[in-house]
Every structure is written in C-alpha cells, then in structure tokens.
Image (cartoon, rainbow, N blue to C red; front, top):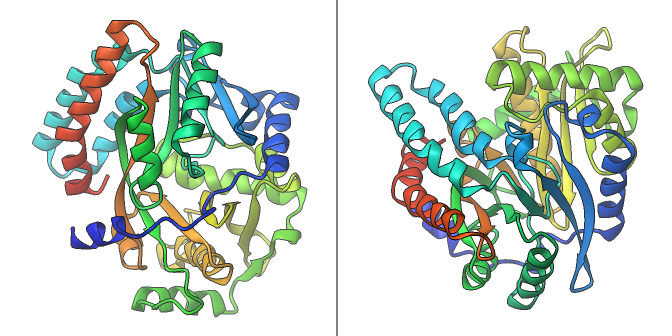
Length: 381
C-alpha cells in the first residue's frame, strides 16, 4: 500500500501522452476503410476523428442495441460479463466465488439502467488500455460542450485513467461533472532511467532472451504468414487461456496496424523459423502500452515465452525513456519486475441525460468506490 501511495505522489511529466494527429487520422481511416468486425471480430463500432482545442482525438460511437459488445466499448460487458468471468480466479474458494457472483448479479440492473452502452467514447484507440493525454479545464469544458451538443442521448466516456499518470486530469474531469467508475487494477513501470534497478526475475528473463534456442524477430521482419500466426498466438493466450470476452484482434488488424505504423511488433522464432511468441507495442508521446501479447501455449511453461515478451517491452521502454503502462493481470509477475499497482477508472459524463440514468451512474460510482476498489486491491483483479 505504501508503494502505491508513493507512486501516486509522483508529478506528471509534460507531454507524457500526446496524440500524433497523423496517427489519429490513419487509425480513423483504417476503421472506415475496413469493416470493424474484420479487424476486431467481437466489436461493432463507428470511429471518427474529433478536434478539440486544436488537438486530434479518436472518437468511437456505440449503440445500446449493439450490446453485448466487446467490453472496450460496452460497460455492461465490462462490469457484468467480464466481472463474472473474472470470478474464475476464485475457483479454489467456491463460497467467495458465489458471493461475488451474487453481488455482480445484484448490480447488473443498475449497470443496464445507466445506459452507458449508448456512448461516445473520447480518445478511444480500441485497446484494453488507452493512454490519455493531459486534459485541462478549458479543453474538458470545450469537449463536454461539443460532444453533448452532438450526442444529446449518449454518455460521454473516457477510459484508462489512473492516479499515477492522470492525477490532474482526473481532478479536472471531476470538477467538470464527470463520474469516476473504478474498472480494474493495473501495473505501472515508471522507471525511465537508462539503467533501471534489475530484480532477480528481470535478470533471468533477459538471460532467456540471450539463449540461442530462439531468435528475436524485429519490427521490420514480419511477413504476411507471420500476421496469421500472430492472430493464432494472441488467441491462444488472451482468448482461450483467459477469456473470449477480450478484444478478438484478427490477422488483418495486426497486419494493417503494423503496416500503417500504429503498432510496432516483436517476436521470437524457433529453429525451424516458426513464430512462437509475439508482442505488439503502442507508443503515444512518452507512454508505452502492450496491447498484443501472444505465445504458443502448447509449449512448456518453462520455456518462458511470456516472460521474454514482457522483457522485450520493458527493455524498449527503458531504451527510449518511456513510461510503461503494463495493464492488468499477472499481478505477482509484474510486481516482481518493478511495476507498482494503481486503480484504473472510466470517466463518465451523463449530466445531459435523463435523471434515471444520472442516478444509476452516481450509485455505480459509490458502489464501485466502497465495494469494487477494496475487492480490486485485495484480490489484485
């Protein structure tokens, strides 16, 4: 807990996240040129670019009738379906699992009453983690006015805010009437020094990378066949081992985002030339996220493929002086590699919506603060 508190007090460096207008336009064009379900198989979405205060942001539009939809655009999927799926972590304690599922069931009508599935999501790159640029009072005021005028029946949503990276933005959003809904616990590797302190586990991971059995694949070395294999490897880990509720990124999505310069790829080949692990890295300003990770789960765990992919990302962050948001999951693994936990929030503005929806969101905020956050921290969800 002290470690979290210390991290939260860290000042926000300038331009930690700074949307490149060209990259925003490339991203928007991709989702308008290619049917979204050809890119993310379990997502219905409309994507456009919005300019606020001279800055470009990707904007996604989702209708309540599309639910159930992928959780990155559908709060009912995130707070109900995904939450129920996460109770698999309590399989060793059936009573606790049953209690948590009952709590989720009791809250489900509240989530549906909020109408948050009918939304305009600001700064949505359609990753599980979307780094948020610094937003001040003037920009938030202009953004809120512009979006509520255009989308009078939609909630305005911003995902992926956390107190380590976004303390002043969270404060400014609260002051402008946004509600903060706790979402999950994530892990931040913020050591931007040229030679970070290497834990024993970090040293072991890098020793594995130096072993001759596997060959590191650089960003320029991916082929069309590799994109197909990337989809397979991602699916093995995130869709089959974890849950099909995760974004179902396709080979075409990986190929298009790589070729258009949105994602940087790295991987590992075995001696036969087969790709056995992959990671996709997303840089925004001086922040790094890792939306794609996959490996051949049929191979022995002792091969350490996941460890090596995380080491590749961490080394990239260190080499380029980047703030690395390691997202959620694998709590002990990430702590042992120098990351610190913090709660991630969804900011929601519903002040222009009917009273029933406003009340539902307000109650959600309190329930998540009183019950959700303690559970997230206690069980590292």
